[in-house]
Structure formats: structure tokens, C-alpha cells
Image (tube, rainbow over all chains, first blue to last red; front, side):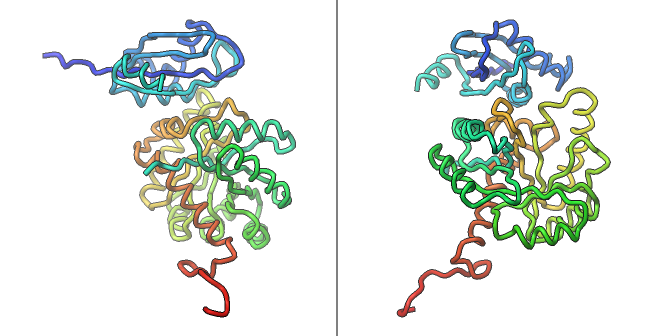
Length: 106
Length: 244
């Protein structure tokens, strides 16, 4: 029987003076993953963008819980988004979206 | 108990007071409780006090640090004699093998750092690690190059770091992970620095130790040694007066 995939939801803060579209953000993220882990490693990550607020520079992404370390590393290695200097910091990690938003509100 | 996180290598332009203040505030926001800045050897006590006050306002502890970049072991010994009692952290940028060996065996040196781009001058091998482990020196890794380099340069750097981290582990040399950055956008949270350490095969527990216990121990030990109450390791003055 197939094992159920456990997931992790990450709330991210984008640290920059510029504003980025969700496409630019995801391109930067995939670029970092591909550079560090290659296409094979990237295939394990199971990443999707859940929420993105361009003005607040806030994003929520989902990943497999086994690859949380890889995602943390890839996010920490990002220095530019769309060729403009930026950094991405993880503010909260949670197992469900509900708990994630609850933690953010706190 | 809550972990105390430290970044012992911030390199702002000390002439730009706005940038210095900005980096201190950023360090506090990112969750650091202790920071150290690379200062020139002739940095005055007044300026150190100014930095301490800035850190106090931001709720961060400050440790003064000097980076020694010397060509000969004789110069290193002479500088250590002059500077050991002025700075809380002494780091040596080992650019020659003689300096690297002298720094590793000298108990006055806290951190050993190696040039990132010149891979032939990374002298952290078994002999260096054995000397460092006896003298309580730690091996410092700056993540700046790890996040700014790309392509073959980063591949070679990672391969060297993987070998050196394994050597440090084998000889029980504490590893200290610092940022080494001069720009606030390159600063990372302690957990993010630890995550980057997985790239050179450092396990999670060791990586977290490298951004918390290991740097904090160095600063605590040196602050105690520099305090006027210190007599010898484990011996300090508790009270002075006629009734003692």
C-alpha cells in the first residue's frame, strides 16, 4: 500500500525593498533547488505555492516533510529574485494550513 | 532552556554608522542573542563602547573581535601578545602554513579561518586539527561564500568544506558557523545557517551546536578571562576586603 505523504507548510517572509510577482518568486526558488540538488533532488520536494501576497512580501508554500531540510537550505541560498537583491526567511513551519495561520496570528 | 544563538562574524563598514546600526537591528530581528564584529586592531575603546551601546539598545550581546591576517608566525605571536587582552575574540585568517600551524597550537587563538577562494591555501588537515583540538581553537566556516558563489567555485568549496568538517569532527575540533557578511540582505536566521551546513554533511544537531553552544562557549570563556576577577581557570575573586 502506498504510504501517505506527510506535508509541511512554511510561511515565508521576503526581505527586499523591491516587489516581486509570484512567478519571479517561484523561479528564484526552483533555481536555487536545481542548483543545489539537481532535477532528481527537485523531484522529491513536491513543492506548491499556497498563498502569495506581493505587497506584504509574504508567501506560504507546501512541501513534503522529508524534504523540509532541503527546502530550508535552498531558501537560505537565495540572494536574488528576478535579478534584484533579496532574501527569504522562514517565519513558521506547520503540519496543517490551519495551524500555520494560527501560529502566524499569535 | 532556550538556546542562545550567536553570529561571531559580521563585517559591516564601520565608517558607515547607519549600516552598522542596521545590521545590529537585523541580527536582533533574526533571533541572534550574541554578535561579534570584525574590528581593526587599532579600534579605540570608545568606539567599542559605542557598538556595545548600539547592541544593548537592540537587545543583543556584543563581543569584540579582531581578525589577524599575517604572513609569518613571528608576527602572529607578537600581535597576539599585544591584542589578546584587548579583544574578546581573536580569529586568525590562515594564509600560510606556518601561520596556520602556529595559530592552531597557540591557546590565545579562538578561531581558525581559511581563505575561501584559494583552495590550495586551506591548510585544515589532520595535523592542524590535532593541534587545534589540544589548544581549544575552533574551526570557523563563513557561509557568505557558500551563498554568493556559483558553479564550479561553489562545487569546489563544498567539497573542501565536507572534507574539513569531517576532519574537525574526527579530532573533536569545535566548528563555528558564522555569516561573514557585510550586507544585511545576506544575513540569515540561525536555523538557516544550520540548514546550509547540511550541504557539507554536518548533521542537524552539530550544525545547531555550531551556531549556538560552540560560539557562546568561546565568548563566555574569554569574557571570564578578561574580567578583573579572573585569577586562573576555575579560580576567581569572589570578595575583596578586610574580612576576607
